[in-house]
Image (cartoon, helix red, strand yellow):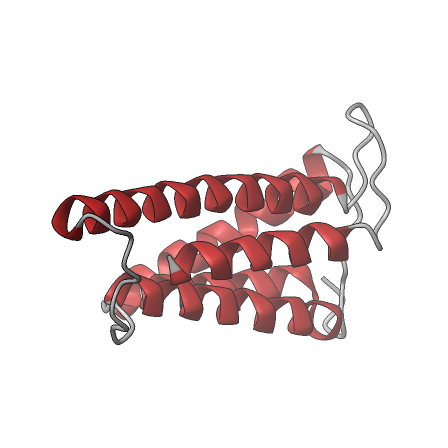
Length: 155
């Protein structure tokens, strides 16, 4: 349930933050359209997950005791820890974006996310992160002609 609440808040914050960027249209998307869509999607999906978990917990509590009982407090599960680390990694990436630019930010974000997922082999992490950063830059800048933050390095 904690993970669903954290991801809901993260989705809402992402959607609201994207409104400071130009949204554009579907035919001519601005740099805020994709984060807005993802933020809304994340908020809706995490809300659905939270409702599902709440209903399952309430049903379990009612069938075992006859009356709803709040679940006992538990330490953070591995899944919740990963969700919080993912959210922190994305927050750091957002802070780094205007400073180091889109390309380097995506590279750093991918390294962090792959490590959080437990991929420990550095050659794999390096190759996937580099390929993702190059592919994203190529798709957004070259193919879609969406201007992305360049940051201090210039790309």
